[in-house]
Length: 107
Image (tube, rainbow, N blue to C red; front, side, top):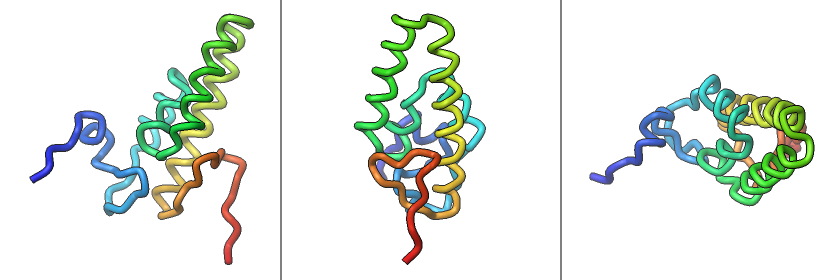
């Protein structure tokens, strides 16, 4: 039996492509997305490039704009994590650079 990491266990055992029937904890993802924008993308949405870009943007935003920059980027990260968590709970697969305003076109 494969042992799950603590992060996966905390996050209801969800995999990045939501293969299991378990749902993402939207509230937890939103809180993490506010305080550490990009971390939900890295850990749960399998969007590593996007996640590291948001973390870099957070650092630069703090250095340039200090508190105001982190508030704006934090709100962006929280909204993104909330929307993408809900979309994954509905069974949607996310692209590497999917943001909350992107919708996959139905075929």
